[in-house]
Image (cartoon, rainbow, N blue to C red):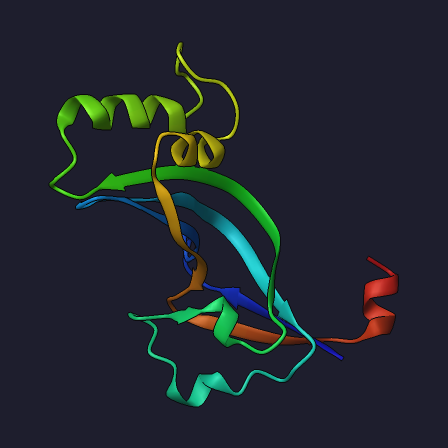
Amino acid sequence: MQYQIIPLELGSIVEREVFQSDNMEIKCGLVWKLGSVVTEQKPIFLKNYLPHIGICIADIKGAQIRETYNSEKVIYFSQTVPEALEDELTDIFYGISQKFSGSYQDIFQDLGWQLIRSESFIFGELEVKEISTLHQLYK
């Protein structure tokens, strides 16, 4: 048996990476407008779940993000990042840099930024559906 965890609000699944260099920090990633999380384990976190805080998907046993739609890339900088550097890193993140090509993760690390953590979250009101294996065969 699988369980599908579906947020009832748009933009409630987030994948985030945090990079640091000296006293500077970048938080960037994807906000999914629609999507769901699937797990083989019956979700037991719901009795203590706070919708306004959410939960890290890694804290849901066996959970994986599935069926995502319409992602939006977002990037935020600590106040210690100079504006000119913000502009350059933003161009790299969105893939519009004239100077660099490749994945932003690789370029950030080549420029001395260290990936501190990569996490996914789900928040807001949730619906949990049981999905039988038989049902999946007919999708």
